[in-house]
Amino acid sequence: MDAPVISVRNLKVEFVGRRGALTAIDDVSFDIARGEVLGVVGESGAGKSVTGSAIIGLIEPPGRIAGGEILLHGKRIDNLPAEEFRRLRGRRIAMIFQDPLTSLNPLFRVGEQLIETILTHTDLSPAAARERAINLLAEVGIPAPERRIDGYPHEFSGGMRQRVVIALALSAEPDFIVADEPTTALDVSVQAQIIALLKRLCRERGTAVMLVTHDMGVIAETADRVAVMYAGRVAEIGPVRDVVKHPLHPYARGLMGAIPTLDTNEERLTQIPGSMPRLTSIPQGCAFNPRCDRVFDRCRIDRPSPLTPDPATIRRARLEPGHQVACHLYAAGGTGEQP
Image (tube, rainbow, N blue to C red; front, side, top):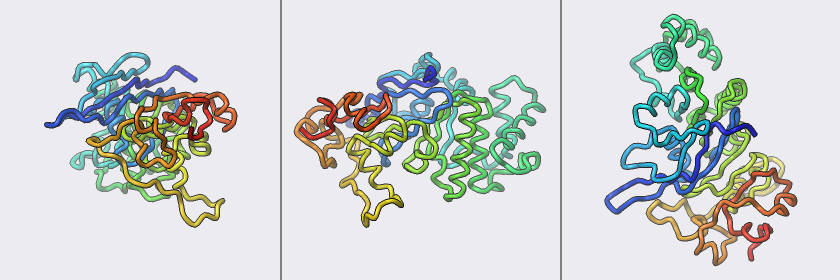
């Protein structure tokens, strides 16, 4: 694998309130290489979007990065002064939000917003910046970009607005993009178009992408690897085919079992009982233990560390190297069976 574009090391994010600090992200680590899409999946409240916001420097008080490191091409960026990080954001790292109107000002034409971003982060002249904006709109599939560049956001459909936001994120040719639920508000046919667009742009430009979503279908179609998050921690991470076909963590198995398929005759899908714990009531030991059907005594006492499964487990399940799971079932012997 190429040297990582972005490296997250033992990231910890807290939100400070009157009753003390609540840990939203706890000891999260992963790398994303050039041209790679890492899908981050989990229920609402798992910490997916907070992780992306922390990487791109958008954690606002009372939130704060309380520990760990974030490195871009090996250089630490989480401790940069605010002004220096602001210059970095947009030029080398960018974000695609769930709602395009979060990124687009309704009072300005889309071309004005694209050109302003290009001029801010490059040395191009206004005429060259306009030409580049037109080319970007064409690249993301906006028809008649020479005319549509002078339109306002409300004159575009939801899918077209999302394409404009992708063009905005790509305008300074960043090395890394966080795509936070970029297809949630779109219908299925438009979702497929946006997914194909992200995959193509990632491959052609070599951009590293962190794709945050709760939709396993989007992950399976788009990502190279997937990280399953639960209660602010990574429960499992590995190549997308391995995690989808051979999930190891009981939570990941529950998520995959809840996906309807055409090759089974089961009348009911798998259901995970209970709900994601609040930050004020994360249980001791493994955070998933109250909902797990394979829980045993150690799960209620000790927090599992991210572990590389035993080689026997990798061979038995035909997993790729680098598949990791934070579960006591694989801590001794790699059998995956309850002691």
